[in-house]
Amino acid sequence: MRLIEKIKKRERLTQAEGEALYELDLFTLGELADEIRQEKFGKKSYFNINRHINPTNVCADICKFCAYSASRKNPNQYTMSHEQILQIASSAIANGAKELHIVSAHNPNDGIEWYMGAFRKIREQFPDVHIKAMTAAEVDFLSRQYGASYDEVLDLMVESGVDSMPGGGAEIFDEQVREYLCKGKVTSNQWLEIHQKWHTRGKESNATMLFGHVESRANRIDHILRLRDLQDKTGGFNAFIPLVYQRDNNFLKVKSFLTGQEILKTFAISRILLDNIPHIKAYWATSTINLALIAQEFGADDLDGTIEKESIQSAAGATSANGMKLDDFVSMIKNAGFVPVERDSLYNELKIYQ
Ligand code: SF4
Image 1 (cartoon, rainbow, N blue to C red):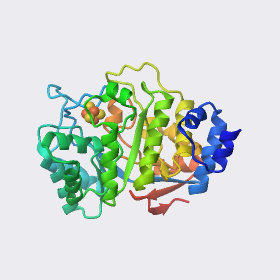
Image 2: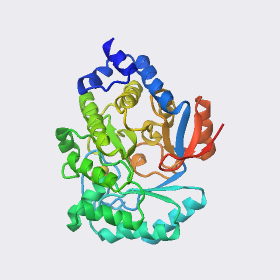
Image 3: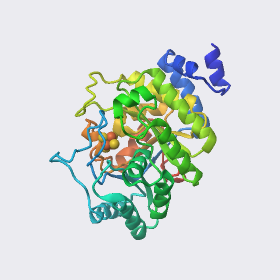
């Protein structure tokens, strides 16, 4: 079959060929993706010791799929003070966290300084910790809310100590689906523009795709290929993270959940199509840990991290609220036949667990 030959020769696939990959049987697709994964990383599976911090759930936007945000009338709203954020950071670092992954809702009340001041204070107190913070959606929100250009917000982030950007806010790039999902939020082109600008500052970022809601397979392939195009220009994405949509407590009301087969196919197809993004991450908080472990055989080489505490996916039904213990994480990866490798946020290897 011509498609399989092209993959074996490591030739680039088109949109139509990407869509056709979904018609292959799961195991053929898995084998093809695994070959590429093993060529790049052998049996190594990467993870980091990190702490997710979500400093506020007060949000000016209204994405239909979101179970995390609170409107100003919601009694469950919260906004952390800088002292509270510092306390969480301090205890996480004492427990071994090397990365703080800080993502907030779009809080219109506290000003740009509330965001940047938190990063600066963490940086002053903990010079070595990696701060991964501010999705492109947050950058766009601050720019709109406070009349700053993207360049000004990104420069402020660098000055305040942000090391890399997470990949959130990408959702699905198709304009029609996006209009339905999250009208008013950062557009697809703006999301890509912000990451491009970040990369030209010599900084790295992740890219995500939220799938399993109302998008088509063609929309997923289009999303992946738009990322591949930008990566050709900048080389700044270090990982691609397909995020499985969680269906509880939101306004999208999708009744069925994706099959495991569809999720695994999407991981495998991502590995095959993204010849220029090094890592494919199975973020266990959205796929479940069991499926993430299996995804290692379908092209994924990274399982994110121990997380410690997670608020966004667990609000929508995921069982990730309390993170994962390091020993359990390592044993599960080993039991699945892979070699756990603790990495830093830029994929330098810190410890191999033989
Ligand atoms: S996804 Fe983010 S921007 Fe959208 S409503 Fe939720 S917190 Fe707000």
